[in-house]
Each structure stands twice: as C-alpha cells, then as structure tokens.
Length: 159
Ligand SMILES: [Zn+2]
Image 1: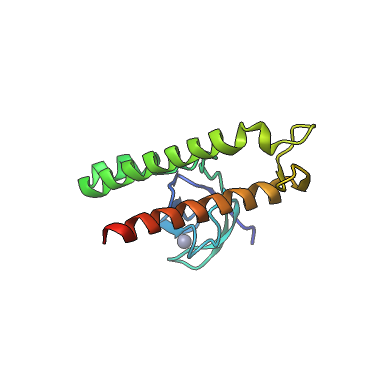
Image 2: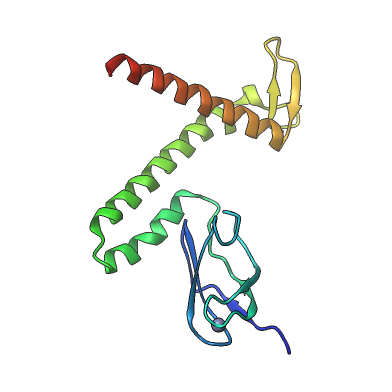
C-alpha cells in the first residue's frame, strides 16, 4: 500500500495541525513532545486516530521566531482566549526585542567578525579562538547566562 502525504494546514510556535489523509481527522502534534524538534519539519508521523503512517510536509515555521507567536493570535482570538492572546502578543514582543539586542550586539558587531566576515570568537588579546556557528552559539549563550545572572543579582537586592 502506498504511503500518503498531507500538507500541514496550520503551524504555530507550539503545535502543528494536519489532517490525516486516510481518516480525514485532524491531528495536533506538539513540536517538542511529539516531533522532538522546534525546527521546520517534514517527516513521517502516525495518525493519532487511525494509527496509519503518513508523510507530513509544508511546515510554515518562519525563521524569525517572534512570528510564530503571531500565528497563534487568530486562533486565540476566535476561541475568545483574550488572556492568552495578550500573553502570546507579549511573548512575540519579548522575542523580537531579544533578537534585536542579539543583532545589534553580535550580528552587526565587527568585533565578532574575522577578515572574511565570518562570525568568530576572540580572546582578550584579540586573537581568534573559534569561528562559525559554534562560536556564535557559545558567545550568545554566554551573553544570556551573564545577563540573566545580573538580573537575578538585581532582584536579590529588592527581595
Ligand atoms: Zn488517520
């Protein structure tokens, strides 16, 4: 029997909605608990109703993560979940601002670029010690850890 495929009809930050090509019932897959990734996907899945396997494709996950929360808004508004609507909107703003800070501090900063324009990590003397995506992830993770530690220290003063 030939395996069928189905196009994802809606994708949000948290879930993917797709209709099973065999039984025509809607399946909701959580990106983390069901699919095991938050990256855009095309993969084999089992229908939660008829248990048949089909190929799910056409993920709408945009690269800009803040937009994922925007995709949830119409569903929340239609369900009259106004509190969650505001929360999702705030999360979109938070991620947008976070990404803007990363862009300003690291992506557009010549301090983190080698002579070919690749992202790099430098030591205190300015010597390049790491290049590429691994360097980028390390520098950004250290920034978040140091920033969060600073915020925790500040809140400790007022509690
Ligand atoms: Zn099915």
